[in-house]
Length: 203
Image 1 (cartoon, rainbow, N blue to C red):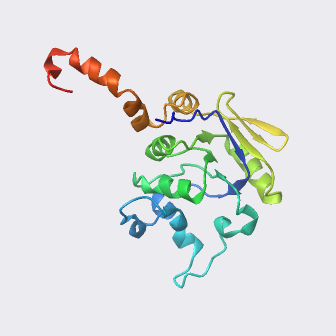
Image 2: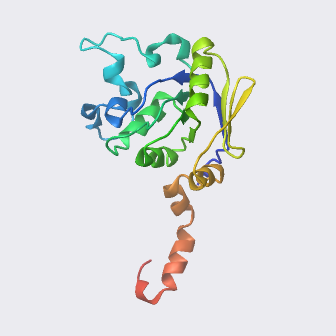
Image 3: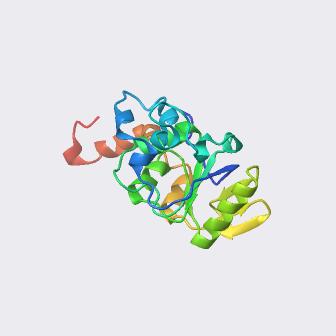
């Protein structure tokens, strides 16, 4: 079985998505959740904000060709609030988002992102504004998230950042994909279960 990647840093260009309290219904409208698998959800990320009722593009950062190849999302405060739908981070991941920088995140959304290997790192509101403006002024600016060092780099500038220790450790130590971790340790789990009297017959 392939080992879960250790994610200590993510670099790339970024998409500015200003505004606070962007909820999961805006990230992926409920009608697109009626799917057998998550495949293809990326095309519906922020659909109602990106397209009108006739399917014509609106003025939205994800429609802006200047950010077409970007892989890092820069958001505001309380991003991912609302319902706990896993489809929201799934849609972002399938759109091409590999990391998110924000002021704060809804807890369940943040946990779902972590289990997909998407770091969600926080900066102050002032730093957030500076990052937003930098990538608006120059979309090709390289942005980096450095989890071990708890910092964000934007071009030649460096800013302090935070992420809960448990999430940082899960990502940097390759423990974020819990299903893969369990499958990789089936023998140990079965051996331990066999040693517990009340688990007789577990295997």
